[in-house]
Image: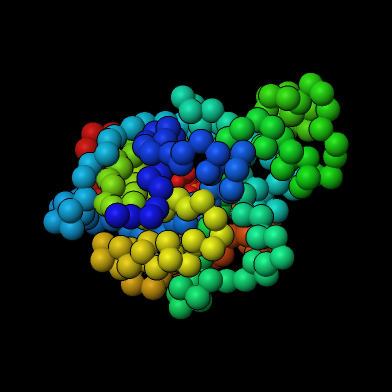
Length: 264
Ligand code: V4E
């Protein structure tokens, strides 16, 4: 039986930890993800490996930052996923007394082939983390995220739609995304409840990525990286300088440059 927790469908939990054993009120939930380029045979390969289609969905993400980009330069990604709510993707807090060092499985791959992020969804956790990064005390009116967005002068810097087909295989999830600005990318994902579980999850994620991907050890940029490169080049350059995004080895061409999947 897989020890990994299934990731959400359309940002809702497919399976969630029992009350008090995970999530933001208990241990941290950490997403371990590796992006890859899907091809015309990816879905057939998934099915051959025993994966099941978990669903299809469409959603729009709106991302927010301060005018001087202090959130994203600190690798904090605040978004409103329409239909799902506010989410903050941010680096996991290092374990108490731990080093936060690179797990062994990741060290075998080039940087950023796999990433680990925490995804916060409770308003209190989101606002607390935002205030920590920005060095301000939370105001009483910020008990909901929109209050904090207004009070902290956060502004929308990106908005795009995604069509997603999701598969599950054991405790892993595979998302095949088509963004509405003409970029397709896929990712293998595991959700774990604690930092100690990250190395094993990484190994599973990278193993499935190798089985599915056409990229070898090449890093594949996410939707945001390509969006910023095309539509917000100064923001993109700032994140390269901050070391938050790595430059793309070969910038992906414009257009629907990977698998064609379903209607637009
Ligand atoms: C974490 C992050 C960003 C926010 C968007 O995250 P991403 O996983 O790319 O989006 P999506 O829509 O697949 O979210 P999900 O539905 O899985 O929660 S934008 C940039 N980052 C950091 C980052 C990075 N440095 N390198 C790579 C390869 N991906 C993300």
